[in-house]
Length: 111
Image (tube, rainbow, N blue to C red):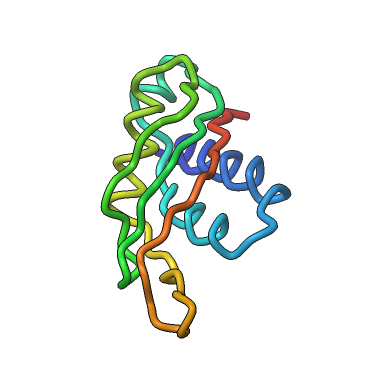
């Protein structure tokens, strides 16, 4: 278990330097656990994804736009976003909360 937490820290550090927006930081908060089977099998990679966000900031749909090459990492990316992410809602021209989308990436790295 301690190794899994260490691996998770590596994931967070790997994506933190690219986090130029609050949306990336909000998405990063969803990735709290390295997928156990992926960790055991040494699976690593980059997942690009597209997430739709409702006017309350909750993700409503997620799709992988570029695979890591490992189905478990791809699935874990969208599962964690859908289960754990909370985004700042988009705003319309009048400043009201509105639906929006976000394209992001997560780097799954074991170190």
